[in-house]
Image 1 (cartoon, helix red, strand yellow):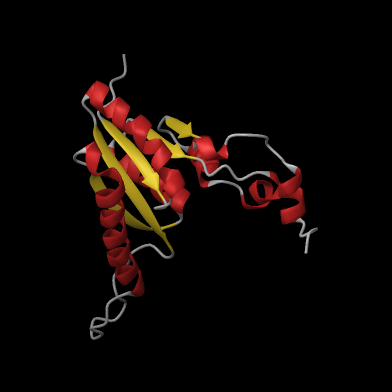
Image 2 (spheres, one colour):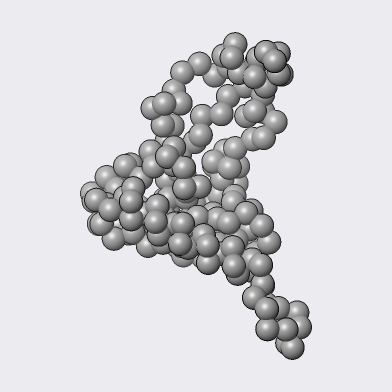
Amino acid sequence: MKTIKKILVPTDLSELSIAAVDYAASLALRYGAEIYMLYVVEGEPRREMLSVESHSVPESRVCEEEGKKELHRFVYWKLKEIGDVIEVVRAGKAQTEIKRFAEEEGIDLIVMATHGRTGLAHVLMGSVAERVVRTSSVPVMTVKPECCSGALITEKDVEEDLHLNV
């Protein structure tokens, strides 16, 4: 029987991403697992400066520092009843960094919320959750927030996505 000791909850710091936290917290309580909250700052991965003489800080480093502050605020204000949560910030493409972190840290389960995009927005933009599910070697549980449940494609989706109502 596979035990769950490390649970990864990727977040984009939106209210919708909190839906996954409830499930992760329940599983963590049941299995005595640790919860890792991962926020990925979109952009170039962190890298060292090319010039030794330069004393400036790489832009990606500044973005990661801001991301750490935002994630800490998010966890403190929205998830303080959960208990200990390990906060992690990475820079890069969300789906790539989620998979990379999960593999590097030996994560047993990824629990992530879907944003409930429907219609053409989903078809054109895709979904980070969907890409992680399709390509991750680590099991992924997706959670759809209650506010997003409903029809797959609505008339409103078509009107908004095609800009029919101006």
